[in-house]
Image (spheres, one colour):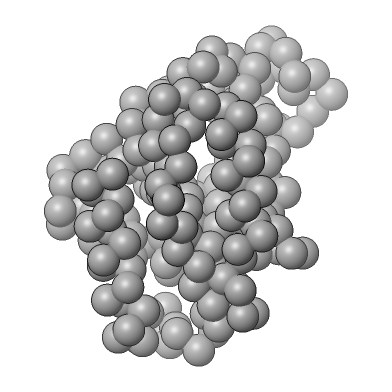
Length: 178
C-alpha cells in the first residue's frame, strides 16, 4: 500500500494540489493508495504528556492505525517553510513515535517531493527529512523531486505546466517500481 502525506496543516495549500495529483495518478496505477492531509490532525497532539503512550490521543491512534502502520511506501509532499519543512510534519512524526515506533517507518520506503515558490524546490527540507527518516530505518528513494516556482505552475487549483506534469508522472512510475 502507498500512502501520500500532505506535510502541512495549512488550509487551501498549494501542497494539497500536488498531493491530490500524486494520489489520483497513483490510484490510476495501483489499487492500494491512501492519502492523509496533516490539516486533519487532532488539535490535541501537542500536549505536555505527548512523549508517553498515555498522552497520545485516541484520534491520533486511529490515524496511525489507518495511514501509517499498513503503508509499505510513502510519498511525502513537503512545502518549504522557513528554509526547511513545516514544523507540523516533525510534530506528527514525534507524536506517533511513542506507540510501536518500529512499525511506523522501519524498513518502509519513502519518496520525497519538495515544493516551493523559490528556486530550490525545498532541497534543504528534503535533506532534513532524509536524515531523520534514515534514523527511523526508512529507505529513501534516491530520486527526490524538487518542484520550484509553484505559483507559476498552478492555476484554478490545477497543475497547468505540461513539463511539470510529465516530470511528476515519470516520478510516479519510479515510486511504483521502487
